[in-house]
Image (cartoon, rainbow over all chains, first blue to last red; front, side, top):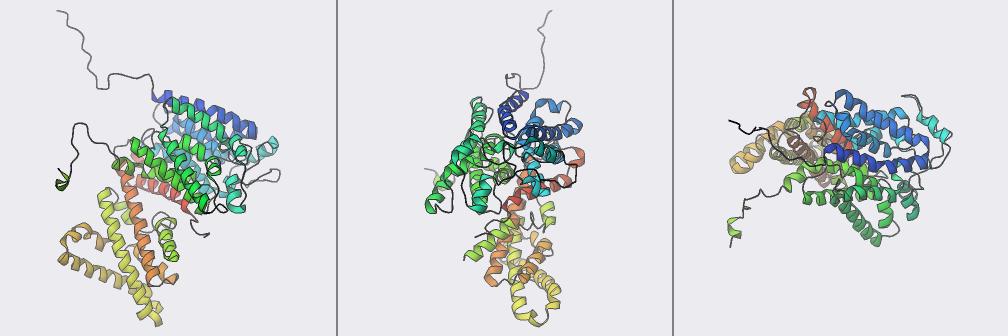
Length: 337
Length: 192
């Protein structure tokens, strides 16, 4: 007798063409134009900082992570995103340390990809900001002598940074906050302003993020809700006191808001899993960004806003938990018809 | 009014007792396993902090004027005994409230956050209402930190945490990350 062969396996039995590495490498690919732009604006030291941060993320992932973990591309994303939030003249050992801290304490201690609470890139950035506040807020001007920037890049670990040959300037947000001058919106869109590697050209980041949104590799609700919240709040405040509060376009395109909204807030692991949750999450980030930028002691609040909302994600998931299919929501007795 | 609001916000988020000043870490580590428990712990904290603020204000104003060297010991004794008496009264008068807060009240009377509040309040020379705003803010901040920590811990309960990072060490790492995130509030409202 010839019985058909039965294969017993656990579900799921159907696999889609899109796997985690597919998504991750697509994100890496969409970051490449932004990387290219940062190299265009800041010269070879941009590439050096990005490479150091990525190496910092990859080394612990390879050493302590699951077997083959670096191959899924998520650590490369962490490294690139961290590098894009750093100033171009940063000593390379700091960039490396930030990447390693983000991966080890942001991801590996939670058990690796998919289980972390905080965005590893932002955690690494927050750590660097707390440990080296001066180095992290020294912003070289784009398009200057590459050799001067590279020499600050190559500062030996734990040595003080020599900034004698570097031309620095405040970021547009710093100028707004501490000197009360606004930068023109076109300059913000095309990126000819001081700032970290990835916060220069807002337009390019919007295009690259838009590609990911079209391919559904990021939840468009999150950036839309962040931009809408910031725009509404900034417009309302601008109407109340136009002297003190800048308009919506400046708030949207300055600083790291576009990069944060497109690439960091939308990290699939650390954002809410429900649609309603995504709207709440984005709105919370928008409110916190406006509050920290306008009333806080820091010029830029996108990183902290996203980290704080990351911490709230388990809570958001809990309150937006959908009804279990086939069950009836329990209605209080007096509300029944 | 704006002053009281500033004191409240400052104590709740900017100088959050747990995440910025690292006070009250024992309940933060110990009772943050479940959101429901953490919330009750937070409420008990608000309650005790409010009593503390009242006690400290009354002691400073009426009793300790000429004997400031007795401050520390009298704070501890008066606060602890008053909380004990309140606990007994609640047990008798409102069993439901006792069930919600009861077991936590005696646990936190000797907490550093409680004594910290009394000492901060004295050093900054807060009056009655300023002290109450400070206590409510500190309590709200503690509750916020506890609930955040508990929801994160619940969500990473099933995570594949490496052996060396299990238990308290993971809690400490999460606490450090939360603390880094709360640094974003540094200097909030201070310019206005």
